[in-house]
Image (cartoon, each protein chain N blue to C red):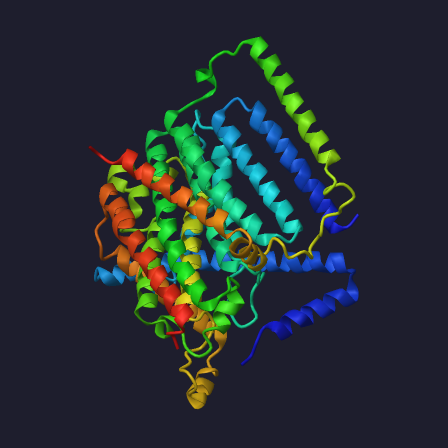
Length: 167
Length: 358
């Protein structure tokens, strides 16, 4: 087993374990912290695929910005295990059933897609995740969607400022 | 110019001759880790002493002068005291997270050492997105501060952590934009490329006024990001006792302290690399003779000289400006620094496209 394989299994195990911990942690702050661990494990996978830019952007956007926002809100609201309302047992059963159905759909979709079957990942070599090739693709083939999404972000920012402004 | 690549390849060849590749790689990593930890210890001792000496000098007093000649062993004695002190954990704290937070802070500081070029060819990992890596990993610092503040179960700690988090997240924007302006001029995020592009002059001289503006915004933003005065609202003693590390004592407190000083060193090293040429000696265009004379000064001396100059500037801030109020702090970032650095980035981009720099 090569070093890359060992890393792959370690990271996958870590990702799945911490994803489960996100769900079963009683304390919301612990859940958020486990979610950060999940993002780190996924970034590790990106690095194994030589997509360093994607890995770093994943860290900046999710672990660095969105999760910090989550932590802020949860910590300030001081949610803890006692404040958690008792849920109906039937609600849990329905949740498991719907989640399981979604999993089945996703797995069957991945298994039946012709693009993915019998393909192996490019380890350490591919250049698709590097900043140069990503930039060229974004600004050549997807210029209009890219610009549209930046306008979307801008309008979201302006909206936040308008809502936050004092009367 | 003497470079460290000879030493590195020598060690590498010696190890691969004796062990198999995987083992020699592991040994090399361990060596690099030991080097980083040694640097950490030395930096902690030197920077704490430097801070106290600089503050004493600015306030016309003597500063530490009892332990060792001229007090140079003072921080060693302090470290010894912190080591033997009891590390208390509050009863109602979240024990695991409380004890984990200082280590997270130190791990983040260690990870930040990877892409910094300390001298010619002395760099742990020259990855192709070096500058972005630094800003990404340093944003993880916020999480350790938030964990520390929340898990202490103390309202002052929580308030300090919240202030600190809000401050770091907002000032990261203008720091990132001023870093980007250099990246636009160089056309690469790789640290070695950025340093090589300054072989005929540092960016602060080559890039006219826009570069000076982004240098100034960078220094202001990183002072705020490292939670140092005049932006030290997070640990405003008169309001919050000690901010997010109120409940920490002994070695766990020392780790936060060390991480803070190492972060100051790292942001100054990044500033020196981006704007002042890193290890690149002071070169002027095509003045061959002058440049050749400058090359005789070792590259590591250039790097540490520039970095410590910037550290001195940041310490100078601390003893010059009074602390800002929270609304002044947010106004400064969102109403002044951010628009300035956005316009500045546009101007720099135009400059890079039209080739108006040297």
